[in-house]
Image: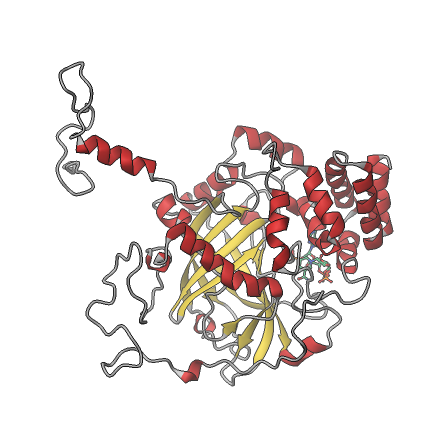
Length: 478
Ligand code: NDP
């Protein structure tokens, strides 16, 4: 095959890409070596801001196929009929570590999916856990600081973790999952993905249902023992990234079954749990899983930066038939994800090929840094107008949502046991050997903090389940 000619970024042919232009054989470099300057200047700008959280990730393209009819709950076009296929892209990350950090650390995993539906992009920006550490986003920057590095030493700190968690008992449920076997998956194909938040479904009759999404792995949940994870973190920090890439290259396409839990709108008012509290699950006995479809990852990215690093997910990206709920964490993420992408990638990040919807996009947004499509051409750029510009369609209006009460700052806890029952339920469903590993994992971390913090935490664990707290107290020698 004939080789392409090397050019500058302005397209001019390059005569020599190995020797810079100098004044004489041993002389200094000439400022007019624009080939060198062009190369160095672009190199200096190769990095874009790293995500504050979820910086390290692998990604892949795939397909979503509807297997069961859920049109009684939602008019979303992605679920319109059994057999319908929608292209998608997924990005799977650790949370706390920086971009080059090890894949096999104990951490929550991001499970971010973008479905290119024919009515716009639906982003399901979830985690591999059904709950989260906090239920109000006003705590989020503080919580993430505890997972990052100390101000003076730039080291991570067990004291920061437990100091925060001991004063925020709503974290106990997620802490229990984090230190359980599921805190270190064997790989991306071996974990579930959850919306964690409650969202809403709206059907063709404009009825609203509350909904939680569960992507259950068809490979089966498989976790990695701590010792193996520690070893791999040194030997192959990119273990999970490599594993996913190689599986897809070999044609071993990982699959997940999508289920939903559905709650009729009015049941939310009197349910035992606040259904919009992100630290809670809806027990399966109350809201059984309803099958919807299958997601398969079947194509590796061609270019990591263009597709995985530049992919930008936002819970604000919903489509007709899928919408928000009053979950306080979701409400804040609707703002903060798109805000992060505007900072990281610029105002026109949704025009990047990986983020671009695969359906027509018509609006009056124009200009901005790095606008690289036709920018709307000669079409009218304001509304109302008399020039046949795109128009809003009231048929897509959501049913009104009844809200009552005084504007105030509310703690959403329901009863004194609210933060303890579900972590206790999780502990009690674990087999004995897993309970033992959970206690050992927590104790290994708690042994590194002050006695005062240990005592506070053991009191919380005892409230979840006496055996849980007693086991930890014994293991750390309290
Ligand atoms: P169920 O017995 O009906 O469900 C238990 C669920 O817990 C399982 O379906 C499985 O969910 C998950 N699970 C099983 N073993 C473990 C484990 N070792 N670590 C983490 N999760 C596990 O009871 P409930 O629905 O009442 O839930 C009981 C507890 O299970 C909850 O308090 C919560 O901590 C946990 N859980 C519940 C989920 C839910 O949506 N109801 C989802 C995940 C966990 P899966 O199939 O999703 O892996």
